[in-house]
Length: 144
Image (cartoon, rainbow, N blue to C red):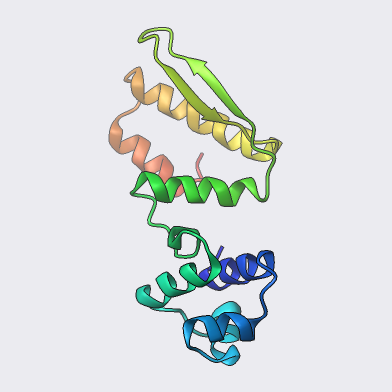
């Protein structure tokens, strides 16, 4: 989801108008509208100001990089808005560690994840190389 869509969703959740949000951050409602429809992208300082005005974490607005655990969490939160995502505790048989896993109530995605799991297993068992695994990922879903 784009930054503008995130701003709009949270603004509507807070029952704020574009004018109210603009006033809170020192901008016009026109600029807020431009952000929301994607004609303009707020700079990082403005994203932080919008987050304060919307009483949310700035990570819930900005485009995640997915290299930080927090970004992964906000991406999962976003997916949770669209899919029924139950959380499960799974105990690793080897290490006895407990892990939290995410499920999706979406059969096509389950099929995709199942295919990915098979490829990861092939890699772990040495049936394919790391290069072949990477090749599979960058060509997905157009693989043989």
